[in-house]
Length: 552
Ligand code: NAP
Image (cartoon, rainbow, N blue to C red):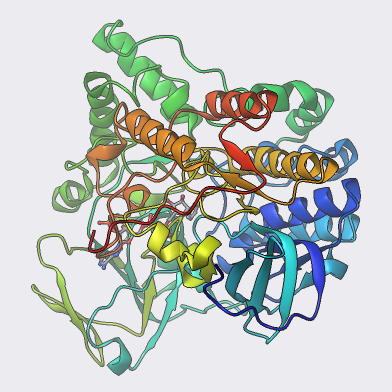
């Protein structure tokens, strides 16, 4: 039974990819240049880059070190590209992705300034009919989402924004021409990764900066700087080993993971190890110090307490320091942050911290922001308020699978996927870094490459056998969803209100969305599925769609 009439199509493709960031670019290359398929990419922006095309706010950079924040699939590409920063800054990452697009001649298959609005699976043909906001309609055998995990920007609905006489911006939709804060009174709402990166940079330019903080954060110094050339030359001479280690690690990094427990050393030794990790900076503080910081609450308390002491040491005004000390969640239960001069910024005379946990924002007025405690006059408001993460970009599109099943209906209680790669009821639809895969808990390019290669192999497998459809089996999917939840419950993640759980979006189902079992274990499982003849997938016709009971 076909629920929705199929629109007239203007092209027939082997595969349609949505998005031209890291994921979409590599997916296009893999399907077009290795499998010889007819592929098209739709991209909403007018250039490649995805996340790095949109997030141009001051101070935007990646928390993964540059030498592993790139593709590993092409040895020449690895050798020819020169990173300049220890952590890659947004313009440099965007430059890299443009270089990749040129090098592999990818642009000729990308339709820019085109947003996919709807996709319907046609039962008779076993293809997807896809519609765009540019009025294009195409039919494709495979539909692959490369839409990123953090793409649907979230501006909270605070009353009065339309009355504000100044200008306002969201970090994830930053104007390409930049924003000049010179002489301006600026307010930043939000202290996640985007806030913590932009606040020190805005403070250096603005006349006055007021930070509106709902939840204080644990953040670790990045120790950012220019990358050492001798280090990069060494990396390039042993890249194969570096990627091998990264791909078989827990989080996609080539770091040695500590074998020690934080509870088996005395206080002095523990303090020295934390201090050394703090001075070295970055995520090594979590992985390189002790093995149980992310798993054992008592071990975690020692690391959390170390950072609380650091905040009190760095921030000179004791009242401001206390406002900045996180007390309601353990380290690592929200996304761990990496910063440059974040806490130091609160020692500046032109920076004010406002605690909106205890005196919430009431409204935006013509002149600024009014909280329960006071009114703050502002010329510019920056929303560093995050994203409708992991599912927001999927559910903006009207995606309908077999028997007209809407993805919005299938995921009404939270996303349900098999391996984060596919979802039951939606044949021939693959997701790159979908919910239920390690994605945001890992170094993204490592996870993206694994997904792209797995999907391309699956497409080749079914095509070689003349099989017209491949779909996640509902029973295998239910088991995977349960496994994802069980693993999350062994970690610190359920102990905070975070976007990992959808807690930042009013009304969003509270479900832990990424897979916390590690990229190593995950890769093994994906490989096993293939070795067992695509275990957990139905190849060919599928059983009737399972729908949620009415009213549930
Ligand atoms: P985020 O982590 O979701 O942080 C949003 C901030 O806004 C939080 O402080 C949140 O407070 C606050 N907020 C949200 N709604 C609010 C409201 N209605 N009123 C007041 N405050 C509100 O968003 P993000 O900083 O854009 O980062 C999202 C993710 O993108 C990161 O976790 C990371 O994975 C990725 N990212 C990475 C990098 C990097 O690699 N360096 C940089 C930027 C982003 P609560 O904590 O109380 O909810």
